[in-house]
Image (tube, rainbow, N blue to C red; front, side):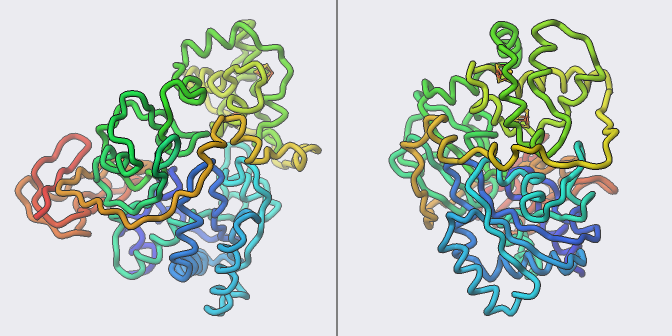
Length: 442
Ligand code: SF4
Ligand code: SF4
């Protein structure tokens, strides 16, 4: 079996939160393979710790993927503030004699340095076309944990564990490795909080993560962090607003200062996105489908809503408003541009993470979250069939079957985008529901 088949059968997906099946990224030839080690979401602490602990495995997984896609160069993008991880990487690159292939590029500490298109520009000076993907400019991008999973897949190990930071307004911020399918509430309680009546939980980083609607779910391969905050925290109140209410608020007070546009990371890459125009369209009920198509270029980084707009408005949701409208009409943005260049002020408009964290009201919680050997053992796990981009996995087991840890329990439908799923514990299949396969441990 070649690397691509091993990665597919091990169920490797983008571990940074997107969940795109990794084997699809390997079905190509590229000029560069890039390791996204920026970890730009405030408070999350998975990638740096993993790279310090599993340096060789991550480097080997990254190299193997790079060689597989014929990349002539492999570049690790890491923030310059992560000095000890960078030295460790440098030392092991030399020890493994990979210095002719893998290079480290240090990036300033700004948000969103880990946005795939921003990263591609920072590391290669190439600009992904608007509405496009990195391979269009010869790049494949992998997250650090994904590279670790590629290495594990090459050794025959499937993805049954996930690294997660649990942090926020909690006594015991930490990062843990947990089994896929573990009840989320058990993971949250490791933070030292037992009762969650006064708390809300952000699923992912504080910038892009949504609020978890209920805490009864199960860990998937996509989870990266849980940020626990009091319900009256400004960020929770802001994120709790629904699209209809935000649209009403947006109609009231936009002063068309265009800060949302001028600081937008995708606008700064030369893309045609201009959220202030979506705000204007909402305010004046402008019906200009052609002009509103650019809303589809938004990557939902949330920088405009949570930092740029001094009036506290919702330009990202204005984009979303038009995205949804255009999706209903079946209208897609088609770029007429073939060449892109960054806006003149880009270098000075990259938002320092420290300023962002203060604006978010998270500076008190910007602490280490040490990787801890968790005591958590799940007696029953529930494995989602929808933990990746693409079609849900179809069960290949039946109720009553005995399974081993690591055994395949679901596969994507034939000729569909999707990912394999595996048992994370040995036991018996006790339930198969629409979206879940439940295993009771031996
Ligand atoms: S949404 Fe905010 S930042 Fe954007 S133009 Fe209106 S007031 Fe300015
Ligand atoms: S969320 Fe706002 S800042 Fe981010 S890409 Fe969309 S419009 Fe630009």
